Length: 154
Image (tube, rainbow, N blue to C red):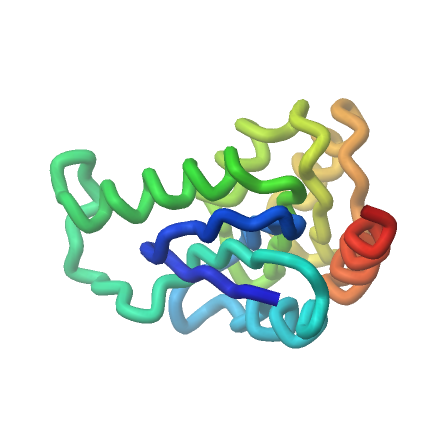
């Protein structure tokens, strides 16, 4: 398992690429990406993790801010390069960017979603999943196990 965090360059690898889309709100969202990394340890995967170690909250969320733009473009490139998009909606967060990414990739066939009870827009997520045939899982552990099984079959 290789874990790439923003803004590192994606490696040239034939291993399954899994983008970790989901709640990141600093100091609110659990660090669920760490659980996913432990679960995939030893597997032939590249985890594409947008949770940047050196995020600066003072960065203007503006197209003209170079570091912010670099982050968003890195995420868009990672989503496009991925074989699977593991999407987790932490019930303690709003996750507006994750909702945006869900909309962009709803028809891609790459999404696998865990949206536990309590997420503020679970109904919207469920309806979109039903409409587009996106597999849903009740917990982070369940979606990880499903993708791990897909990786094992590759």
